[in-house]
Image (tube, rainbow, N blue to C red; front, side):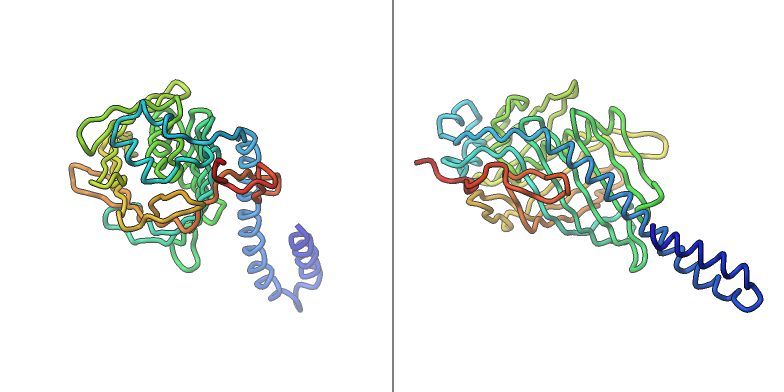
Length: 318
């Protein structure tokens, strides 16, 4: 704002002394571009910070220690998976912050673009906010925010944080973001005990998970390897087309060698996201989770603070 005021004053003086100072307009134009880009970034970040503050208000800090008895009603392979995740004796997860990096492309023939992202989840009232910076070229970036809250989804992407290139909402987006939440539950596995999810075993190494929330219901199939680790999640999800969205097979594959422990919880860190289209497979996102922070909330400034003071996350039950 100070720069904009200075720019106006500078250009006014240039106009007053135009014959001698007219070339200063070129410098002012360059400065104006910088001001516009800075404003776009500030405006986008301010909007997201406000959404995160509102989002964090939904977090329930109720503590509960997970016991083996809590798993008994789940299919055997799901019980095996949760035991592999090492959740027994740990605190239930009610909020999550993921730090991510990866690369994405918008078409099967498109160029891969680097991505840095943060994603925040709540569990009692299921939802997420994903905030990403996509580097399209060295001088061109896209700011993205995908949101699932109160059963509704909204994807917003802005070129240079200024110009909307995608603004998706509606029933197709609601279904898609619900499925995204369900598939990404592998990063906060105690959420599998939530009452809005129903599971049924299909085979020794596969289960169908059905999630119902906010008037929307969708289902997908989790597959596991022989040791009980999740290897993939597949569902029918709406794929955006110019002529209208169509239901297509959406597949998330998990690298079985990427499992790591965060605060004693074992989760995967690498996955690929693929559309299984009639024209062929379209892998559009390759993701790596670099850090996972459990059971913390976002304060008003957008930073993280502990929800439960003086208590270490996942302190073992004594």
